Structures are given as structure tokens and as C-alpha cells.
Length: 577
Ligand code: C2E
Ligand code: CA
Ligand code: CA
Image (tube, rainbow, N blue to C red; front, side):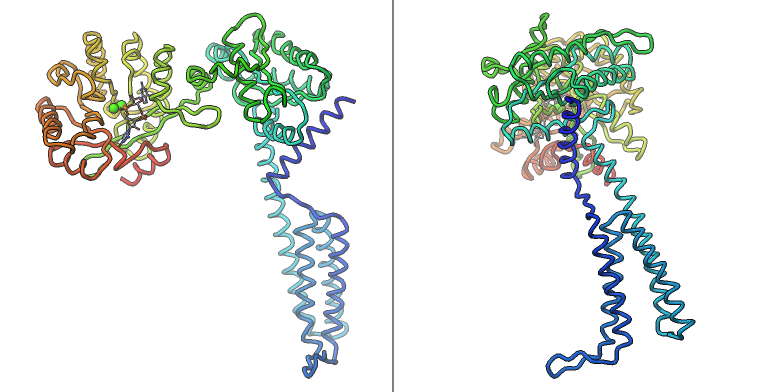
């Protein structure tokens, strides 16, 4: 009983989602009959009109009736085309039969009755049959394609569960109809370690096994409530619970799913024991709109994950709302866990506007799709001790991108990546970089590592040893943000570096007075003496560019010639060079 209700309603909602994605409408059966009728009337009228000797009288005008034959003939053909387009297989078969029967009938007219004027009709008939077949098969192909599109849009390919989109559609629907329900966020704990130790494939199999169990509970109505489970992404699932009598019943249902998660999973002889953090919020009591409901259940899930006691289920509360648990720390952790850190590429040019390379700049997007600035999340990543993972994610993705472009185009563009000193000082930094070059195929002399001047000086000795090793590998070193720290060029000379990046604050001030300009000029000439290549950062105006040209700056990076770009645009820039 429950089962039918569940699948019935789910299907209805999914169906609705699907049909809103695509307008695949087939005409009802009576349209076939109507069109056929119209076709026969039109065809009969053609022959009647063609053999008629009477005129059509309109006031003073007399039009011979036979001149209308063409119009009716076109109308009959139109009926046939409509049949194929709007009436599916039945329309297709009906139109084929009608057209095929017509050929011998015309032949009898021509060869038996000697009515030679109908002869061209045979050719028109054959052409129409041909057109009908072409239209039908093209339509079939399109429909198949659309069906696949449907499935892709609402189904998670790995597990076969509905995906996040389908889940959101259902939420919208329920909120619109103001029906009470519970939104539950399920996040498998420490799933990354399964992927890390057993490989991605095994991780996927565990997810599929979990999905099977979830499906079983939801489809067979084992929980006693009406449930809809979908996979959001990675190891995150969302559950929507309806048709319950009390809050206790909601909790009972959630426990049922939790039990399905913690029960031993055996795959290829390996036993897995997983558990999950589960948060939920009830509409409309805990939150009255879709977005706050979702962020409420996610906040509760995060909170219970953070406490990580024996109870792993938590309902969203107003106290939770007050505490900012969707804080930047969580966003960084989440992005690392889900591998959603990405990067932009800001181009660097020489003074004649030729591309020198790109600086990879880390980006992070929160759940609402807003891009968070690295100025916000890099300090958080350093504080949390995850800056190395974050840096490495950017290195890997950006090096893979440029490595590919090098293979495709032979470009000599340099990739500059930022290294936090904490990361640089880690014992395996050199190994990480070696592996990075190997995996990406990026030539060593096309990788540049940027390190902030002030931070370098704080740990000078160890830093210069690591930098020397990197240099020996052929990698370029850039001193970043020059001018914000000690600004001591002679001191910097002790570091084996190639490039000096003058901080934006200098470039900003440069044209405000003669002394500021002289200062930048002095930095550049001294840097040249020490054989540094100089890049001016944050160049925004033509005036700044002109000054920098005059005082022999080598390269510029700034909004004037290029903002941080998404990959595709960066690729286009390389192609155009
Ligand atoms: P940065 O290394 O000095 O990078 C340059 C920053 O200046 C970028 O900001 C860039 O968008 C901005 N910028 C460039 N040209 C202009 C301009 O003409 N006008 C203005 N107003 N701004 C300009 P973004 O991307 O916000 O990066 C901020 C900082 O975050 C970076 O400063 C860097 O220190 C750090 N960062 C970025 N990605 C990473 C990373 O992957 N790892 C580490 N450790 N730090 C990173
Ligand atoms: Ca930088
Ligand atoms: Ca900089």
C-alpha cells in the first residue's frame, strides 16, 4: 500500500519535473482520426475541383473551381505531415498506409481511365512518403536524445538515485503547497579515507551499496513514512520525510536510515563500517523557505559532525542559527573534502602586450554559489593547518591545465603558483613539486613558485635551502608582494630567485608624486642589477603603464590588460598569441 503511494507520488513529481524540462507532447488518439478525416475530405475535394467546369462567384468576379485543386492538394499533404509530427507511431503508420494505397489508385486512373493529368500525383506521393519517413526517424532520434537528457537531469548516474536537482524540485513543490515535511542532510563521515586507502572505485561501490539500502527503505515504505532520498554529491544525501504523525516519527525514520548506513558493508571480501552525520529541519516550524530549510539542516549536520559524539543526529535550532556555523572554516573544510577548490588564471604580459604566463589564483564557492575571496579563506586555511592541501589542489589543477596546453600548442607560457611559507617549509614540499611536474608534464622552467617576501625573511635559512633545491630542478622563483615587508633588495639577493613582483600598493602610489615614482624606478634598476625580472602587480590605468614603460619595468599583471580568467578564456588567450 505504502509502496504504491510512494512510487506513485514520486513518479508524478519526477514526471512533472521532466515535462517542465522538455515539452514532449503527443496529440491524443482522436487527433489521428480528425487529421485522417480532414485528409480524405481534402483529397476528395481535389479531384472534384480538378474535374469541375463550374465557377466560384464572388460579386462580379468568377473564379474557375479547378484552380482551387492545388490548395486542397497542399492541405491534404499538410494533414499527412501533421500526422507524422504530432501523432507519434500511429500517425506515422496511418500516413504511410494512406500514401501507399493512393499510388495504385492513381495508376488505375492513369492507365485504365486514361486520366494522364494525375501522373505527377504519383511522384508527389512517393516524395511525400520519403518525407514522412525522414521526419519520423529524425523525430525518433531527437526523442531518444531528449529522454537521455531527462534521465541525466534528474538521476544520479553512479547510484541511480534521484539527484540534487530532482530533490530541489520536490522541495519547491512541497514548500509551494505549504505541506509539512522534514528535510534531512546526511553526510558520510570520513568517507575520504575509504577513497584514499581503497581507491576511488571501491569508494564508489560503497556509495552504490548505501544507495541500494536507502532505495529499499524508501520504495518498500519500511520506515512507515513517505520518504524521498536523493544524492546531492559525493558522500552527501538528502532525505525528505512526509506523512508522519509526530516529531518522534521523523526521528524514527531517520534512525532507520542511520541503521542502514552503520550496518556492515561487504564488497569483494572487504568489510566496511561507516557512519554518518545527520542534520534535519522541519518545514515550516524550523524554517519557512527552501533555502533556510536546507542551510538549517546542513548547519545541524555540520554541528553534529563537529561534536562527533555517539549521537549523530541533530535537529536544527535557533541557537544554531545564531552561531555562525557556516563560517569560513567550514567552507574551507567542505571545499577540500569535496574537492571543489578551483582556480582562475590572471595573465601577465611583457610591455608589448605579449603573454608571459599566468598566475593561478585559488577560488572557493560556497553552497549558494557565491565565490569567496582568497583574502578570506587563505588565512583560514593556514589557521586550520590545511593550507598545504589547498595549495596542492590549486597546483595540481592548474598544472594539469597548462601541461595539456603545452602538449597541444607548445606554448612557453609560465604558470605562477602561490606558496604559503608554512607549506613551503613542510618536509615533503620538494617531493610534491617533483610529482606535480611528472604528473602534469609541465616543463620545470614553466613553473614559477611565488613566495611572499616578508614571510621568507622570517625563516630565511631553511627557506633559502628549499628554494635552492627548487632552482636546481629548473623551477623559477618569484618574490611576491615586494614592498609590503622589509623591502630590502640586498637581503633578497641571498635568496635564489628570478622574479620580483612589485606590490600593487607601490603601483597605486607611483603616479601621485615624483618621489614615489623615483622609488619604483630605483627598485627596478636595482633589481635589474641583481638580474631579477620585474613584474608590476595591480596595473589598472594607461598612465601607470606609460610610467612603467618609461622606467623599464619588464612585465605587468593587472586589470588593465587582464583580470583573473576562467580556464577556457585563458586557453583562448594562449591560442590567440
Ligand atoms: P597575490 O598573490 O598578490 O595575487 C594578486 C591579487 O591581486 C589577486 O587577488 C588578483 O586578483 C589581484 N589583482 C591583480 N591585478 C589587480 C588589479 O589590477 N587591481 C586589483 N584591485 N586587484 C588586482 P586574489 O585573487 O584575491 O588573491 C589574493 C591573494 O590570495 C593573493 O595575492 C595570494 O596571496 C593569495 N592566494 C591566491 N591563491 C592562492 C593559493 O593558491 N595559495 C596561496 N597560498 N595563496 C593564494
Ligand atoms: Ca601571488
Ligand atoms: Ca602579489
